[in-house]
Structures are given as C-alpha cells and as structure tokens.
Image 1: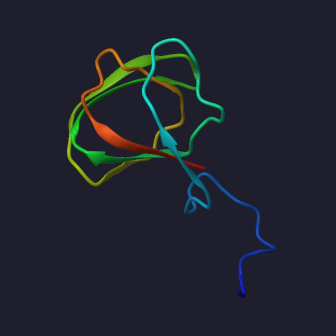
Image 2: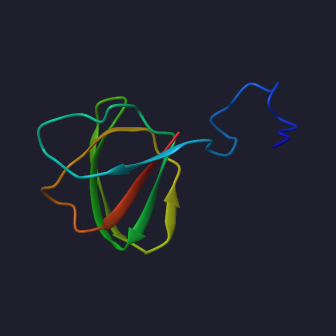
Length: 87
C-alpha cells in the first residue's frame, strides 16, 4: 500500500494513525497517552488529562470523537462505552 504521507511528521492536529480499546478502570493509567477518544456508546466520560486534571464530559453522544489527551479513563463516573484511544 502506498502512503503519500509516510515522510511527514505526525502532529496533534492531524488524523490519528493508531487506535486501541480502552476498558475504563480507576487504578491504572493507559499504556499510552491519547491524542483523542472515540466514544461508540454515548454517556458520561470521566478522565484524567495528561496535565493531571480530572474532568467529566457529560452526555457525550455516541459516535463522538473528542480531541483530548488523556492518561486515564475512570470506571467510576463513566457510563459511555465502546471507547477507543486514538494516537
């Protein structure tokens, strides 16, 4: 497969090139900080940003992509599902 952008540096404003499933949990951080989150099943999303701020996104619609860099997705306070970390 040809990738015309293979010689370009990735930027935070560009599209993600990798994704991984996130299982919300209160104890451990993610294996990798995200560039964004995809929310497949709508609901609330409680996270810790890479700057260390604990915030909750309320009523995130299904199919949303949030351009937020996070290190943790909490199970407590998260009702959204089918969450993917985008990097």
